[in-house]
Image (cartoon, rainbow, N blue to C red; front, side):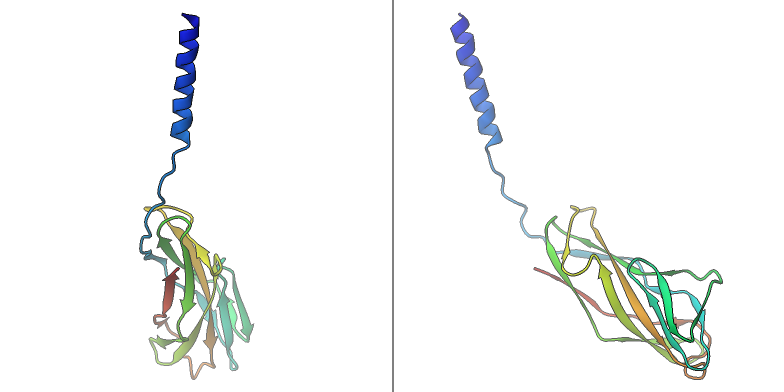
Length: 165
């Protein structure tokens, strides 16, 4: 009777080992999904006669060059955030379009150069849907003198291309 119990236990263990050795097929490729979580904003600043640039890094740090003075009047500044969804492990490349032209509420235009991203290219999706990988994108705003860029609100759009491998 004891040997029958041992034989039954061995068969049971072999069955469990067989279950753990099975392999599953990976998820089929899924087209990536994109959603804008936050637009790019440079906040408030003041320029003198020579102008300069305002830079927002992907981590949200704001700096300037030239004669631009940063002003903290309650206008927030932050990087663009885009959520990329797809199967975990999907490789995505970020390509930026040409410089964007922003139009001012009181006339004038500013040039926007899209900056680096975090994570940097290539982007690897780490979370399964409905989650996603957040991509932070900075930029550089080229500001002229007050005659070319009068005080006001400047708005526009820019092109980003996410290419799935």
